[in-house]
Image (cartoon, rainbow, N blue to C red; front, side, top):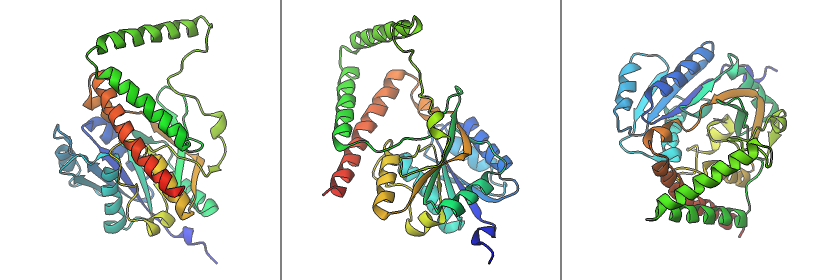
Length: 309
């Protein structure tokens, strides 16, 4: 009997856009190139870009087959913004697989669709995460497990303390002290008194094999027919930014549907393009990140505590 996966499946790509026009175009071009022989649709969600680039994208791709541009009237954040595109790809375009990806993600493989279908046939996953290559040459494929409630509370306290420092009237002094400590730490690493600082942990050794029951990296997630049948949205819609991966993990765990990491599927992640655009100063960017981390950690803790009752 012929496998159901022998039928040609439609892939949807949801790309969340905010202000960085050139990066989104590169992301779209890579999908078009690597999916040229497959059945695919690209759904770009403009998250109310303040510089008019959403309308630029709509005009640019208005006559392009397989590309739809949705213009949100407000910045919905990560979860709700991606959900807007997911719903469109699921309900209007009737996609079988939906790949939700940042606009700073680049597809690398011509056989992306075949690799995803093969992984689905082998593992019957609900959500799959690919192997992630970073722009500095390192690799950061996945997390391993969700932190404990106690660990998450400690993490939130660290963010709250840092936010108090960075928003205080004596911030310049705190900043000077922090930079002095960082420079000293870098120097000690260079002269091998302490381990050298790395921007990213290289996870190559731990990411060469298939894994399941883990929290996946949110820059690129592939949702299968199992997930699409069960859920009308991609992400728990409670957060604006951060912790969406852990909330997705809890959703899948509670439903008993697998999240897997598949190293055969590879993407390039350029990282933080949109937030780098929004906040030209590191201080404003850090305040934005800290505030949203604190809020999202509170939501994640609520979900964990409910599950453990």
